[in-house]
Structures are given as structure tokens and as C-alpha cells.
Length: 228
Image (tube, rainbow, N blue to C red):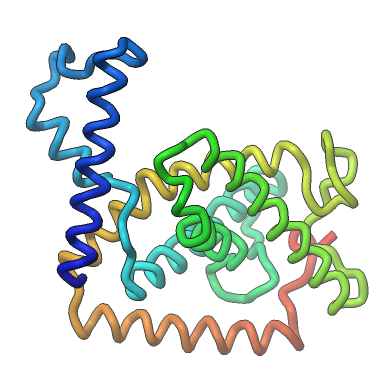
């Protein structure tokens, strides 16, 4: 990270701390200084999870593949509950569902201007994820003869079965957890372990992911519990 980027992160952290002090003075929020938790401990945690930061390419790649895998684990777990057996969810054949990774990374990059306004960030995350999920579903149906990998028909406030209120709410909450907790922790870990080996792992994952995308375009993952 360059010195200018470090200065910017320090500036945004100090700005956030100053705004918090102002709200405490005007009694708009709980005065955290009265909390029994030691002040230095709170400050160190605030710095660790400081959300308004600049992410390196390596951090973004690690975030992407981590959330792709988390999304795959999430959907496989739901399928095991529903069907009582293992179901390899997703269009691709590997242990990743890219809509989760792309959604989280796009929230991280495109909604940075709203990072210090969580309510706006949440609303925009819901809107962004809704667009991603809807048009991804539309594209898959268009390129695979109407085949569906998910269908929300019958769900509350669904749109053409491609998105629904319940799913968008889950994406919004997950997106907030990602940008305010998960991504900063991943970025901290990458900064501590950044070396040639980590870069090589990211490159190998990219090659495997690219190969899976190409293969799955012609031979997509289908079957009971996978496609509708």
C-alpha cells in the first residue's frame, strides 16, 4: 500500500472517530467512553475493522474466492437439510458459487462512497444484489434454453421467480457483514501474509475458476436439487 493510501485511511479513521465524538456530545448515541471496556481496546478493534479502506488486488481476489466458497457451503448446507444428502449446488462444478463472490466484491468496490452511512449502504446493497441476481438468472435462462438454477415463484414479492424480498434481505444483511467485518479481517490477514506463495495460490485459483467457467458453459452442473 502506498503512503498516500495509508494517509487516506488514517484520515478517514480520524474523521469517523471525530464524528462519533460529536454525536456523543450532542447525546445522539451512547457515550462509549462510559463503557466498562477499556478505551485502548475499543480503539484497537475500531482500527482493525476500519471499513473505509483501499483494497489491493490480492485482497479482492481472496475476498472473492472466500465468499464464493462460503456461498457454496451455505447452499449445499440448505440442500442437505432439504434433501438429506449432498447436492453440489451452482452452475459450476467446483466448490464455488460466483454470484456470492461477485456480489460481495461489487458491494465493496462500487458502494464505497456510502461506507460511512450504513443505512444507505444497506439499501444500495439490496438494490445492487437484486440487479445481479435478476440479470444472472435471466442470462442463464437465455443461454441454457430456459433452464433455471433457482426459482422464487410463490415467494413473497418475487419478480419473475428470479428475485424475492426474502433473498434480497439476506443478501443485504450478508453484504453488510462482509464490508464491515469479513472484508477488513481478510484484508488484515492478506497484509500479514502477502508473499509470492499467496500470489501463486490466487493465480492457480483464477486458472481453475476460469477453466470451470469455460467447461460449465458447455456442460453445466445440472440434476436433482441443482436445477428446477
